Image (cartoon, rainbow, N blue to C red):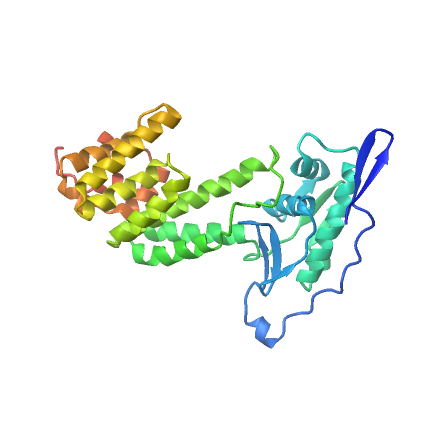
Length: 323
């Protein structure tokens, strides 16, 4: 429990005496040894530390903020100044450094509980700390690794292999990134980037499903995503294409109208060439919409600008010569 002390007119946060740490975690038994990465630090949702899926108590949101900042820079030295900014932003109390040492003690205790080598996980230096994490222990790293494997499969046209990888990556999410950590200017951009990557992976999954002919699944998944993120053209595109392939041309054109009106109303701009090009193809009943390779399409639009004339990149290879 944190103690609040008052000195004059200044309120000081005091983490109190360092907690008494429990004994170090025992090495896994024979059954546990067969389970890789039993120790897991999770940031893709509420910050949590688990051992064999059992939660290890961390403490309050400021302890979680310290752990988040250390984990996002795992195996690197993080200065006390950077940790101060990650916890309080520009409103740090005079006792910030004292408090940080108390929060770090709680992180160290949690690591000691979670891992047999927990005493060696959090290292302190001259006004700095370093958290050691091994491969597979941070869910953010696992998410990125699975997403990159899926993208490689999509580039090679192996949508069937990509879909389970994308599903596993998205299943790691249990809410907004580090949702129990106070948002401050120094940490928020990192968390926003994680959320953006999650959406991109979900959109790549839509492209993979299209490549497998799972148009009905694309419609339901895209509509669910658009309920929370109505301005994402890379989500509207799969919905429009899936509706068209299901024979609902009016629905596809109506979806484009919804996208255009919403983007204009909220952002004050017209849809980009990717979406307008797809709209023109639907209007003209372009036969390539039934045979293009959208799995490559969704990866290509991340790495390269839109194809000439606004055609979906997956349709370019099928474009007749001279057009």
